[in-house]
Image (cartoon, rainbow, N blue to C red):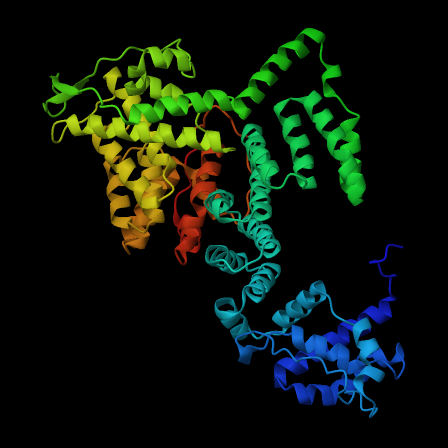
Length: 610
């Protein structure tokens, strides 16, 4: 037996201990009077059945003091009112009349409470709080107690309350690294219980920069699991590399890495990874991890394929892994330096000439005249080529190709590259738009405009600030009203998230025949929020007739993901309905009664044609 291990106690004793703790905490919470508690503690021990297991020498007052000191008191702002231990020469609290040092001091030391036991006491207290006390504790208690309140809400099927409390805790700080990590695990559980996985991914991404390493790794592990479930192994592997950098000795890294590599088809690498992590699993004694890693360490799935097919798949696998790791550090540093140099150089003039009038409204439209060559076939990571032709970094097509190598900032070099590239893209877009005549547009049919529009779309979607994303997408839609890039879909979603319901409705009504779920069902949500319920019911009837599966997926409390096509979606299909549910159901739920209104209104609607 290890020194810190305890023998298994009989079930009857465990029940007696639990009864003693519960009775003690109830007494403390009811009276919040230490003197009265210690007067009654012998009776509490007797009624709990503890006295049948211990003799008269058991220092109940010492155990009781530990329980008192660990119990959060509502009258003290849900903090404990710690009692100091007796001094050595004080009369012993047990009533023997002897000095403390010659009576119960050795026994008290034997019954000192550990931190884990203190947390268990506080957790039992939270469970015994009244509903009003838990509501107050969620706002004013110390961070550890607030964390326990959130855990209680989650365990009692209130994931929405738990999510709100956990986000506030992570935003406001005060948690140590272990508590923060626990909060991240609970937050992931809350989003899963609510079925708001897209919202969960956004929340994890937003909080990772402010989390301590172990907690940030836990968030990345959750993102890895979601990506694997969504059949996005490349995203899963990228998250995992970052997690491994933050918390390198965490066994979960090894387990998820093996699964991610299998999903990528990198079977040989998965086998080697399992062999590398198996000793750690054996060292910590995690039997489930040992079994999984042993199975993976002894299994190569490539043997089942013919040799020529295996070779071909290995080539694809190597390409995938190279894409995941991105350019090497030296290449990134060289390109970053060239981008920073380009920041200090003046941009070449851009001007616009009138193009053919629009056939619908006879308005003059402008065509951008900018001298740059098509970089097709040019390696955007060729630093030597850029040094010979620095104007490439003023070329929208070239910057778009370079943007393909901006990804998750797994290290300082990648982060510096991303930042330098984003700055140059922003400079160039601002420069081009400054030259555009007032009221001018950038029609999609002119090939010169397309890389600029695509870069603008990418910039708008990457904005962390909701209003900044709305501004970028609105500007893009004004420049290209035909919206060949589909900016209207994320724009209306973001407007609804921000509570700009009238603006969202105006966007939806620009495209009355649109078969995007964002337009059809976004219009319904906006009308309900604006209290235009008659119009909302008409809009829902039209949306349900066009896209019935979207409504079915929206109102379902739980829904399994359908088979998804990685190359696109089918309008009216299960995949379209699933993606819209994942992206927007949390927004619908934030509107009181919205899901219930959808369900009741659906019953009155005619069934759509099959």
